[in-house]
Amino acid sequence: MIDLLQKADQLILNRGEVKALRDRVKEREEKFTIAMRAASAAEREGRIAEAIANLEQAEQAHPEKYRAEKLATLADSLSRRVEIEERLNAGTAALDQGRFRQAVENYDLVLRADPENMTAKKLRSRALFLQLLARGDELASARSFPDALEAFELARIQDGGQGPEVYERMQRYLPELRAGGSPIRNDWMGVMRDSDPQRFAKARPGVAARRRPDPPIERPAVHDEANVRRTVLAAVAAEPHEALQLLKKVSADQKGGNAELESWTGVAYARLSFLTADPKLKEEFRAQATQHFRRALDLDPRHRLDSRLVPPRILELFAAARR
Image 1 (cartoon, helix red, strand yellow):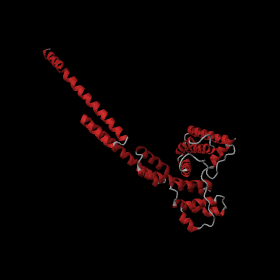
Image 2 (cartoon, rainbow, N blue to C red):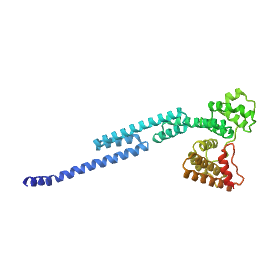
Image 3 (cartoon, rainbow, N blue to C red):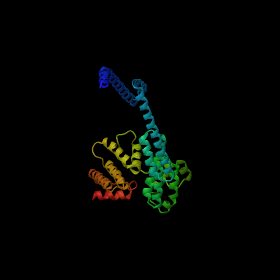
Image 4 (cartoon, rainbow, N blue to C red):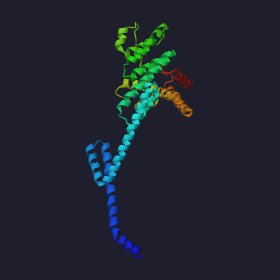
């Protein structure tokens, strides 16, 4: 009992010291937290020297916790690097095996974790190009030449405006187009010319090639109209979600309604309805497409979709909206 009383007396005597110790620990924690937050804010705003100074303050305030935070950040960074490397390898494997859509999906995951990853950006662009090129081959082999023409031109755009590979693929089908007297023969040759002007000039096919008109989107409030048109056309076919975002931005700059913008928005939703496997989403996208087609027709009852730019299934959906 005497020992217990002595210990109690000792605790009472030391209570002030314990409180002071707790206060010092709390103060260190607060200084550390404030300095770390200030460092993060300075780094986000590009004030690197200030960020470094704040990190030094955090280390001085609480060395043990600073080291622990640093190790945790390093571990997280290493983990992310490993995951990025794995995704890049998976994307490259899919690309080599001709699974272009899966390759794009893997590169998208890399860019979500590291938006400035140039390797992922370049390989994603290549995968999209090969996907469109393969689609053009598939459609041309099935004698669906208007749709194949669209896919090949999109591939050319994806490849930076000129692409010898596009020229070579399209050249395979030129004899058949000539023999059948196809009405899109000149358009076909126009895309070949744009894909590889030097080879086209040397070949001298013998028929005056004219350039296919750009998709009929009226003048948006942006500096480079032609670039926007090309971007919309490419996105509608390859990335309908991106096309919708771009169309919304263009629409926001328009005064009043615009039948062309409404119809292209409908085309983007229609493509999404064909791409998704979810029945509920498919129906929702189809309903959205029909709604935008009807808005286009309300604005201009004589409005038409260009059959050279739009696949037959979407033309049928547009015709149904007219009824």
